[in-house]
Image: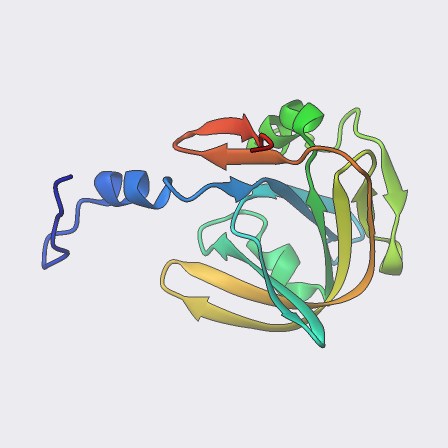
Length: 166
């Protein structure tokens, strides 16, 4: 293994490859904008923070066209995609399309869209946000959740994956 020292000159492509070695789950984060329109996007920057009280976090690029909606709302939903929902991940990752076209949703707390058929849905009240580098970190207190006994969709080393039992 060749180790690179982070100095004055950072190779962002190589760093992305390094960070990509850490497998993550794939989520679609949803909310409503100030006009009541559904907003959603694919994110794998999700993590649990605390069980007591129940708090999670996720982050969004400061360049995202959806950023204002998440800053202006007081709620969001983390929809943990199941392995059979890979097409949803791709659909919600695209810009300039109606991301909710053909997508079945339930109405969650505050009327927010909750995607059907996910491995888990976590409805949160936003309790804080913080600028961290080129992203905004959002903290949410869990108010309602549900899950199905389904395999979660994963992302690792630049590709989708599914967990295997060992």
